[in-house]
Amino acid sequence: MNLLQLRAALADYTSRDDLPTPTLIALAESKFASSVKHRLSETQIDIPVAKGARSFPLPTDFREARSFKSAGRPLTLASIDALDGSPGCTDRYAIVGNAVHLHSAPADPITVALTYYARVPALTDAAPTNWLLTTFPDVYLYAVLVEYAIWAQDQEKQASYATLLGVALGNLSADHARSAFSGSTLQTRRF
Image (cartoon, rainbow, N blue to C red; front, side):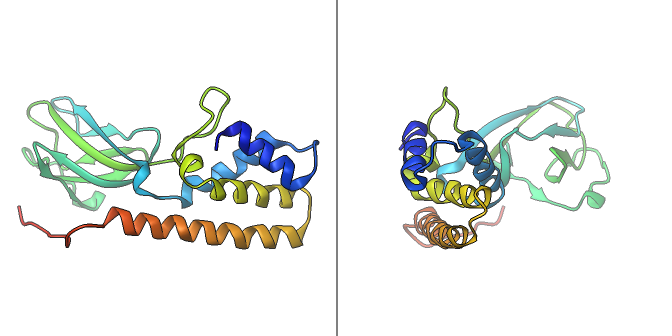
């Protein structure tokens, strides 16, 4: 499914041509930003950190970290109070707002490899699809229909569409759990 097909499905379900469709889609997407997590949204990037820099910005689409590594070794999450700035210790970090703070400033430039869950990319005419709409079109459709029912002040339809959305989100969550951890048993290593 793409944006054009989503708009057509919304018109089919509602039998209305006066809908504020862009607003309804944007409202649904704003709710995805805090609730949708799936292995298909995982992203990996390398972030250069300059010598002497104790912090660096997170990507703008950052939602949740999976892994921070430097020189192939995992960084350890710590409280902001535990980052005392002792020299030479860049193996601990804390997230504060939209930035990552290291325990101390690196003596030389380093690269931090970040694996994270990205926010669902918004649909636009220039980017008419994303992984969620392609793989789980029912999540998008029911989320937009919930927003439609709120807009139309139809509590019965709102409840009905919210139930269907709950089922679709449950299927998405189950697919994530099943596919992200499929295969052999998870092993932990000590570094």
